[in-house]
Amino acid sequence: WFGGTFNGTVYTGGSYKFVDHWLYGDGVMVNTVFFKPVIWIFEASETPVGMPPKMVSVTVPPDYGFYPVNVYTYEINGNVGGVAYGGNILVVIPPGTEVETPTGNLTVFNFSIVYYSLMNVPSPETNQTPILAFAYAVNGNVTFKYSFINVMTGKPQPLITVIFTPDMGANMWTWGPLAIIGKGSGLGYLFHDPIILGRGVVINLTFFKPVPWVLTLPYPYATMMTSSSTSSSMTSSTSTSSTYSSTTSIYWG
Image 1 (cartoon, one colour):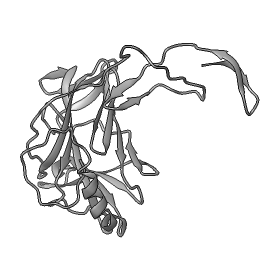
Image 2: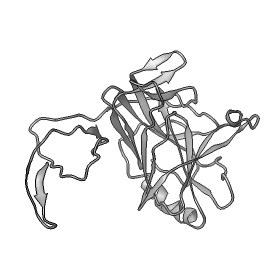
Image 3: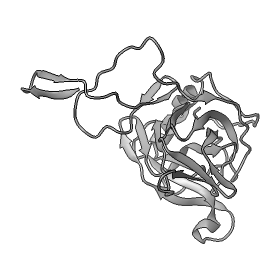
Image 4: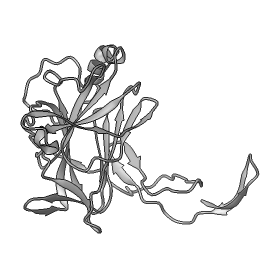
């Protein structure tokens, strides 16, 4: 809605201009195209305007030394995009996204949010304690060989990752084979990823591969997370859980 005048208190005049395009998830709507400070109006509809992606069951095996404790999987049509929401992580797959694989590109794929046990996850540096280890997976695969790309340009298409979490001094790290950064064999931290911190939220706008990441907090905030994160992990009931056991006391999902 725009075309009117604003006197500092009341907006007068204007009209509806066009219907906005939204991406739908389980109990959530996301818009990725707003770029002006104008008025938007929500209206009820007798029939669904859009539907969230269908939840499906996919097994994600252990990989890169990490063991899944919970998995949320949705069937995504990359042409229209969608929102995957599981535990305290929300991921937006923009319209026009394909998955580039060594054997061809995928337009329709199963997208998973994978939560890992923290039992064997080391600290990336002094005074940074892991509080969350997770990954994307495509058709059950967590791999550096896949990339999300823009169907029009063929260039990487980062997904939007939103994590609802305490943000005090939070840091994000990519985990995987050290050979990727030329540091020999074994597994470890590869990159210190850029994030945007809000009040109780961490956002990443650069992830374009289905690989593992670790979120860390400095002491004493990480210690304070033990009870709250364990409690949070019990709040979600519609998930596809793996069969791998874990004794970790800090994880969400």
